[in-house]
Image 1: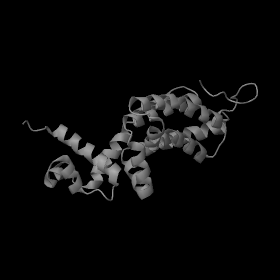
Image 2: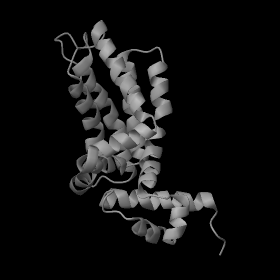
Image 3: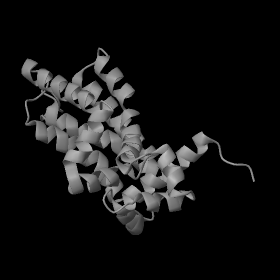
Image 4: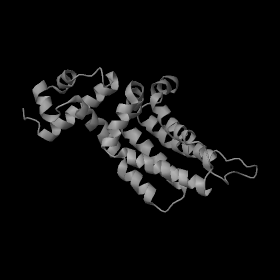
Length: 217
Protein backbone atom coordinates (compact mmCIF):
# COMPACT_ATOMS: atom_id res chain seq x y z
CA UNK A 1 0.00 0.00 0.00
CA UNK A 2 1.48 3.38 -0.98
CA UNK A 3 2.25 5.77 1.85
CA UNK A 4 0.30 9.03 1.87
CA UNK A 5 2.35 12.08 1.02
CA UNK A 6 2.82 14.84 3.57
CA UNK A 7 0.09 17.05 2.14
CA UNK A 8 -2.46 14.22 2.16
CA UNK A 9 -1.61 13.29 5.73
CA UNK A 10 -1.76 16.88 6.95
CA UNK A 11 -5.14 17.32 5.27
CA UNK A 12 -6.39 14.14 6.97
CA UNK A 13 -5.15 15.34 10.35
CA UNK A 14 -6.95 18.67 9.94
CA UNK A 15 -10.13 16.94 8.80
CA UNK A 16 -10.31 14.62 11.81
CA UNK A 17 -9.25 17.43 14.16
CA UNK A 18 -12.10 19.61 12.89
CA UNK A 19 -14.55 16.75 13.35
CA UNK A 20 -13.40 16.15 16.92
CA UNK A 21 -13.33 19.84 17.82
CA UNK A 22 -16.94 20.15 16.62
CA UNK A 23 -18.13 17.02 18.42
CA UNK A 24 -16.20 17.41 21.69
CA UNK A 25 -15.00 21.00 21.86
CA UNK A 26 -11.44 22.27 22.19
CA UNK A 27 -10.95 21.39 25.86
CA UNK A 28 -12.26 17.84 25.60
CA UNK A 29 -10.27 16.96 22.49
CA UNK A 30 -6.76 15.64 23.17
CA UNK A 31 -3.82 15.26 20.83
CA UNK A 32 -4.07 11.50 21.45
CA UNK A 33 -7.69 11.56 20.28
CA UNK A 34 -6.65 13.26 17.07
CA UNK A 35 -3.72 10.89 16.50
CA UNK A 36 -5.93 7.83 16.93
CA UNK A 37 -8.63 9.22 14.63
CA UNK A 38 -6.01 10.06 11.99
CA UNK A 39 -4.46 6.60 12.27
CA UNK A 40 -0.99 7.85 13.23
CA UNK A 41 1.20 7.93 16.31
CA UNK A 42 1.26 10.90 18.63
CA UNK A 43 4.95 11.66 17.78
CA UNK A 44 3.98 11.69 14.10
CA UNK A 45 1.16 14.11 14.91
CA UNK A 46 3.58 16.40 16.75
CA UNK A 47 5.77 16.47 13.65
CA UNK A 48 2.96 18.36 11.89
CA UNK A 49 1.46 20.26 14.81
CA UNK A 50 3.47 20.70 17.99
CA UNK A 51 0.50 21.83 20.09
CA UNK A 52 -3.27 21.51 20.07
CA UNK A 53 -3.48 25.31 19.97
CA UNK A 54 -1.60 25.43 16.67
CA UNK A 55 -3.87 22.76 15.28
CA UNK A 56 -6.95 24.69 16.39
CA UNK A 57 -5.59 27.80 14.68
CA UNK A 58 -4.96 25.80 11.51
CA UNK A 59 -8.48 24.31 11.50
CA UNK A 60 -10.49 27.38 12.47
CA UNK A 61 -8.13 30.01 11.12
CA UNK A 62 -7.86 28.31 7.75
CA UNK A 63 -11.62 28.37 7.30
CA UNK A 64 -11.92 32.02 8.34
CA UNK A 65 -8.93 33.11 6.29
CA UNK A 66 -10.58 31.74 3.17
CA UNK A 67 -13.31 34.37 3.65
CA UNK A 68 -10.92 37.31 3.77
CA UNK A 69 -10.36 37.87 0.01
CA UNK A 70 -14.11 37.92 -0.66
CA UNK A 71 -14.77 40.35 2.19
CA UNK A 72 -11.98 42.64 1.01
CA UNK A 73 -13.28 42.60 -2.56
CA UNK A 74 -16.84 43.41 -1.41
CA UNK A 75 -15.68 46.35 0.70
CA UNK A 76 -13.49 47.75 -2.09
CA UNK A 77 -16.24 47.67 -4.73
CA UNK A 78 -18.05 50.91 -5.62
CA UNK A 79 -21.50 49.62 -4.62
CA UNK A 80 -24.26 50.63 -2.22
CA UNK A 81 -24.47 49.41 1.35
CA UNK A 82 -27.38 47.09 0.51
CA UNK A 83 -25.47 45.66 -2.47
CA UNK A 84 -22.57 44.94 -0.13
CA UNK A 85 -24.98 43.35 2.36
CA UNK A 86 -26.33 41.10 -0.38
CA UNK A 87 -22.82 40.02 -1.40
CA UNK A 88 -21.82 39.38 2.21
CA UNK A 89 -24.92 37.27 2.78
CA UNK A 90 -24.09 35.27 -0.32
CA UNK A 91 -20.45 34.82 0.71
CA UNK A 92 -21.20 33.63 4.24
CA UNK A 93 -24.07 31.38 3.18
CA UNK A 94 -21.96 29.65 0.55
CA UNK A 95 -19.12 29.20 3.06
CA UNK A 96 -21.52 27.61 5.54
CA UNK A 97 -22.91 25.35 2.80
CA UNK A 98 -19.33 24.23 2.07
CA UNK A 99 -18.56 23.91 5.81
CA UNK A 100 -21.94 23.02 7.39
CA UNK A 101 -20.34 22.17 10.74
CA UNK A 102 -18.78 25.64 11.04
CA UNK A 103 -21.76 27.45 12.67
CA UNK A 104 -22.02 24.79 15.40
CA UNK A 105 -18.26 24.84 15.85
CA UNK A 106 -18.34 28.63 16.32
CA UNK A 107 -21.31 28.52 18.72
CA UNK A 108 -19.66 25.87 20.89
CA UNK A 109 -16.41 27.80 21.11
CA UNK A 110 -18.21 31.07 21.86
CA UNK A 111 -19.84 29.38 24.83
CA UNK A 112 -16.60 27.72 25.92
CA UNK A 113 -14.22 30.67 25.55
CA UNK A 114 -15.15 33.59 23.27
CA UNK A 115 -11.80 35.29 23.99
CA UNK A 116 -9.93 32.27 22.67
CA UNK A 117 -11.98 32.33 19.48
CA UNK A 118 -11.30 36.03 18.94
CA UNK A 119 -7.59 35.54 19.60
CA UNK A 120 -7.47 32.71 17.06
CA UNK A 121 -9.29 34.86 14.50
CA UNK A 122 -6.83 37.70 15.08
CA UNK A 123 -3.93 35.45 14.06
CA UNK A 124 -5.35 35.19 10.54
CA UNK A 125 -6.27 38.88 10.31
CA UNK A 126 -9.99 38.18 10.10
CA UNK A 127 -10.59 40.67 12.93
CA UNK A 128 -9.19 43.50 10.84
CA UNK A 129 -11.74 42.69 8.14
CA UNK A 130 -14.51 42.54 10.75
CA UNK A 131 -13.42 45.99 11.95
CA UNK A 132 -13.48 47.28 8.37
CA UNK A 133 -17.01 45.96 7.87
CA UNK A 134 -18.19 47.53 11.14
CA UNK A 135 -16.49 50.83 10.29
CA UNK A 136 -18.02 50.90 6.82
CA UNK A 137 -21.59 50.45 8.04
CA UNK A 138 -21.13 52.96 10.85
CA UNK A 139 -19.88 55.44 8.26
CA UNK A 140 -22.91 54.77 6.04
CA UNK A 141 -25.17 55.39 9.04
CA UNK A 142 -23.37 58.69 9.75
CA UNK A 143 -23.90 59.77 6.12
CA UNK A 144 -27.59 58.92 6.29
CA UNK A 145 -27.31 56.32 3.53
CA UNK A 146 -28.78 53.62 5.79
CA UNK A 147 -30.86 53.73 8.94
CA UNK A 148 -28.97 54.30 12.16
CA UNK A 149 -29.46 51.19 14.28
CA UNK A 150 -27.47 49.75 17.19
CA UNK A 151 -24.62 47.70 15.81
CA UNK A 152 -25.80 44.66 17.76
CA UNK A 153 -29.06 44.79 15.74
CA UNK A 154 -27.12 44.52 12.49
CA UNK A 155 -24.79 41.85 13.91
CA UNK A 156 -27.55 39.64 15.35
CA UNK A 157 -29.81 40.00 12.32
CA UNK A 158 -27.03 39.13 9.89
CA UNK A 159 -25.42 36.22 11.70
CA UNK A 160 -28.58 35.00 13.39
CA UNK A 161 -30.50 34.64 10.14
CA UNK A 162 -27.58 32.99 8.35
CA UNK A 163 -26.36 30.61 11.04
CA UNK A 164 -29.58 29.50 12.77
CA UNK A 165 -30.80 27.33 9.85
CA UNK A 166 -27.55 25.35 10.00
CA UNK A 167 -27.85 24.92 13.77
CA UNK A 168 -31.41 23.58 13.41
CA UNK A 169 -30.95 21.59 10.22
CA UNK A 170 -31.58 18.25 11.93
CA UNK A 171 -34.92 19.55 13.21
CA UNK A 172 -35.91 20.64 9.70
CA UNK A 173 -34.88 17.22 8.38
CA UNK A 174 -37.05 15.48 10.99
CA UNK A 175 -40.08 17.69 10.38
CA UNK A 176 -40.01 18.04 6.60
CA UNK A 177 -37.67 15.35 5.30
CA UNK A 178 -35.28 17.95 3.88
CA UNK A 179 -31.75 16.64 3.47
CA UNK A 180 -28.59 16.81 1.38
CA UNK A 181 -28.95 18.83 -1.80
CA UNK A 182 -32.51 19.79 -0.75
CA UNK A 183 -31.08 21.66 2.23
CA UNK A 184 -28.57 23.45 0.03
CA UNK A 185 -31.44 24.55 -2.22
CA UNK A 186 -33.35 25.76 0.83
CA UNK A 187 -30.38 27.81 2.02
CA UNK A 188 -29.79 29.36 -1.40
CA UNK A 189 -33.46 30.33 -1.47
CA UNK A 190 -33.26 31.59 2.12
CA UNK A 191 -30.52 34.09 1.19
CA UNK A 192 -33.00 36.48 -0.39
CA UNK A 193 -35.12 36.50 2.77
CA UNK A 194 -32.04 37.35 4.82
CA UNK A 195 -31.37 40.31 2.52
CA UNK A 196 -35.05 41.27 2.72
CA UNK A 197 -34.98 41.43 6.53
CA UNK A 198 -31.70 43.34 6.54
CA UNK A 199 -33.23 45.76 4.06
CA UNK A 200 -36.17 46.31 6.41
CA UNK A 201 -33.66 47.11 9.13
CA UNK A 202 -31.34 49.39 7.16
CA UNK A 203 -32.90 50.93 4.07
CA UNK A 204 -34.02 54.53 4.50
CA UNK A 205 -36.40 54.78 1.52
CA UNK A 206 -37.46 51.16 1.08
CA UNK A 207 -41.05 50.07 0.69
CA UNK A 208 -44.17 49.92 -1.42
CA UNK A 209 -46.76 52.69 -1.53
CA UNK A 210 -47.70 51.92 2.08
CA UNK A 211 -44.09 52.09 3.24
CA UNK A 212 -43.65 48.36 3.53
CA UNK A 213 -41.10 46.17 1.79
CA UNK A 214 -42.53 43.35 -0.27
CA UNK A 215 -41.39 39.82 0.59
CA UNK A 216 -39.36 38.42 -2.34
CA UNK A 217 -40.94 35.70 -4.46
